[in-house]
Image: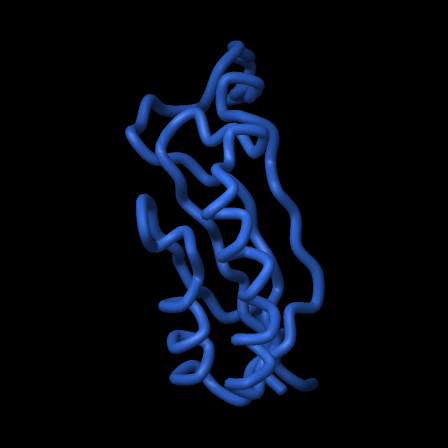
Length: 113
């Protein structure tokens, strides 16, 4: 099956400790919804709030996120799905789409030699 990175965007600072009980309930249902559509979450990670970021640009290192934004990357997971259409159906069900959004990108597979 093809693999996709699903990037989760949430309103800044996207603190994973600030999730509401309703949102947590939606997250708990999500893996079953993914499986119903023929997908599988391979691995996933939540990120610390964006205020904990350290940006590096050339030799310049600064505290805080790389750019100021209303929405920041809050986490990501790797999804296996039969094809992009299924991956997008799965992404649309993600609770992050309620107040933020998700981005689906195919993982790079080097060409066969």
